[in-house]
Image (cartoon, rainbow, N blue to C red; front, side, top):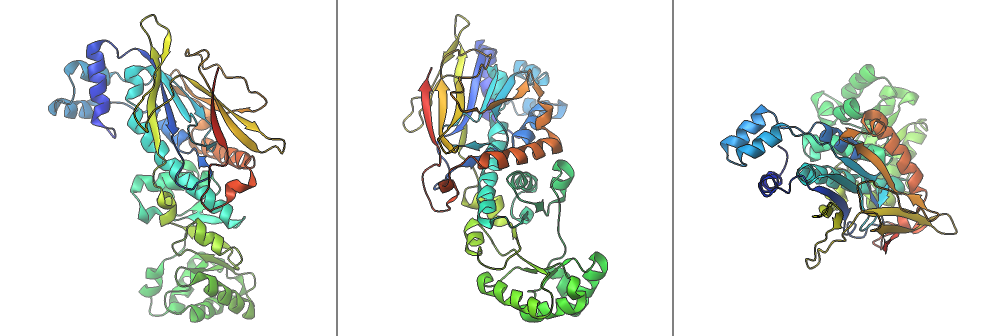
Length: 435
């Protein structure tokens, strides 16, 4: 029921007109990247496949639909037996995408496929937005570890999705326990300012934390006065103090002074982590500062200003009167689409870096999903779900790890200018080619 009403009313009308079972091909793509971005990241695929596998209408849902006269009794009977039995192909999770990249293709009868539109877009639009922003943060951090800690800045379900997406593109940990339980993302966390203020003194709070978590813990030193907090932390934990955390102030100057004081006190091995409203630009500005790790919250879970990726779900081919597949497309001003099944291939320049995304259109437009000629490039489409059965390697913790590895591999294909934070054109041009 986490869907839009018009998905069900379209099914209702299609059942009445006799077109509900027409073989159809739906495509997910984005007309553009978020403003100024050089590349996008596909994320949420494994999560989506699990949701599609479980997409059902139970007695309670059907009763509510009937009570509210959303659809006819015939459609209620159809929904009671609903199970997606089609095929889904698309880019591997963790893959990069560009404007008009055919990220996902759903092949099924019309009613089966159209019913998934809201589910597909709600997952891919959010997860990919977070992954795209998080990937830029990882690049800006230049190898320093990052932790996701934005659960209090978004919805309880999207918090888990955000932690998963961030981990896929290189974040090392999350504060969200459900992301750890469901998806195998390493979890981290120690104490907030409230724990310090609970005690009669900062020293008492630090002693309680060290007693519980050991000297290698991270102590939050900016509840009152940073300089005194650092000295107290060292006095309590000694030279084995793992890290101090800064969550406020002018980080660029504050980090330098904290590093000097730690070294003066003999704690050269104590790390500094910062967590004050960071985004990719703030992280880049701290590149020369003695920061050891970052914690990112609000900017991450909001896609650093772009909480959705602008992806759409469009019918691009459907069965004609003679049983053959017919390309279909919108002609709407500024929203025109390209009909027909697409076969994307990433092509490389002489330097081995990605230079062009060739999207072959047409040719054999049947349900076989035959790959286009690779032309010396890399085919981008992989099977995700066949006859309603999800590819097991894409699911669960193993799927997250596979997506994380894949992202690392494909990121190395990009030209150097792709990692600039300044606004610019997509790093790889997309070109539609007729077969």
